[in-house]
Figure 1 (spheres, rainbow, N blue to C red):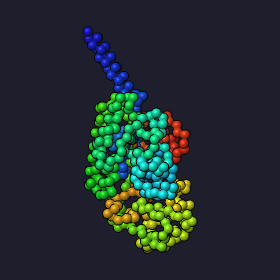
Figure 2: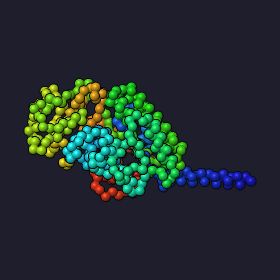
Figure 3: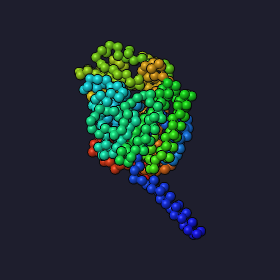
Figure 4: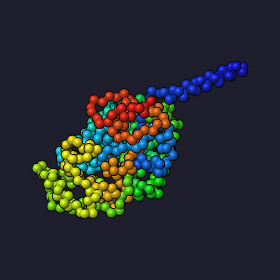
Length: 407
């Protein structure tokens, strides 16, 4: 009898070990990408959010995710899901002008016209390859198209609680296997908003990060307890944040005597569009002459053929400005009421505080790995590699950059 009991216990332990092993090697290992808008890389050390740090320790964490220029929300979110620099995916700022459409871009306007987004996105590539996707808010995930739309998505509503967004991702993962998405994207914006309003070292920001980290813990607990398979989780942000001066620059005087240009104020840059036949050099000279003495250290002028190489504004398109008037931190074009106490948008090489975060954990990733900073254009090819998807169009991102972090 004793031998029988011992044998039964051994058998039960063996079966249980097979179940654990089966979970870890399940062929269905979905990928969840969560973007925390405005979460700077240095917030990890400054605020020490326990759940984010636990993911970073156990998985892969970079020294900083390098955003594209300009370090604004929509250009960077599109670079993450297209693998392209803004010149190639179309969103060259949060606000800009399109000569072909004769229209100024506003956030989310792609849902009215698909021509704003000029590169295939992660969800469209996945759907084309018969991989279901679910998106709870991602900039331009509502882009107007009849082809390869997300299987599941929600139209953007700013006041939707973060818990609702993350709980929906878990609920999608609990669908019957034939209905379940394999790639899921989520987006939260509260930390960005609080950072703008109160600054990067404020009590309010500390509390906002603490609140989100608790929510992340709730999400991870649900994933662990309610799902019978392991999940790849990628945490990213689009850019960091820098504190700004309370004394900001006006810009209208820069265009005194210049009547034929169209100027789009992007807060950290002015995009200047000339009419056909206007002389770039002459216009640039006039702007230079209008710069006041106290502004000269902080305002830089660029024309198309001399745009900095690291901007990657290297191709003339309907949305590419002729001239860019750049303001350096800690200043912006506007006033404190409009800009708050911190912002982003500056060229990423001007401050490491503009770096974003990248953390990846799950069965497809190596463990306890710290890697160098890299540009966010390399995330898309890495995700496609998880699904053995080869894309036919050219992108700026390279799969070799992040291939070493994969199991």
